[in-house]
Length: 183
Image (cartoon, helix red, strand yellow):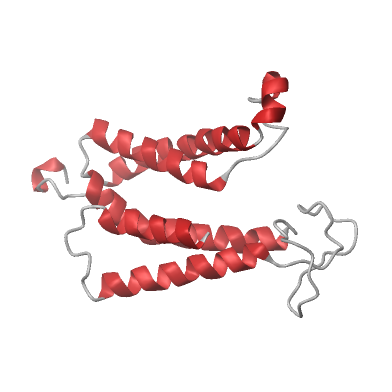
């Protein structure tokens, strides 16, 4: 079908084009965020700003960059932006949750050293993503995954009871705001 079905019709080819914009937008946004966080280093070494083998990405800016470019692509296509944001809410939260849990498998994101029973330590050669993986530490990636899962469950429940019936994108911004607050 085409756009003749109305302003709220979602086209599969629009989804592909939006995704083609979201991914590089997230990568560029994530890199900008990482550079800003480590500005003292990158201001002294500006040639490393675009070096993909050095540094990393920052998740908050990646989400902002991907969202901004996705909205821009939807606008250019004449697609219903609010509806696409509404549809993207649960997959984005699920992706954030699973991504954080995947980081645990790579030994990334340990918090401060701790002797609590659930502290994580990674032994052996690795390659681990933490600076001192053998020191038992708070599993911050698990904490963030659980918080994101709680937001996902809350937003899912609100969607099921019909709280966000208008499908205008407000649920996306509510979900991301709750995620950021929890983070």
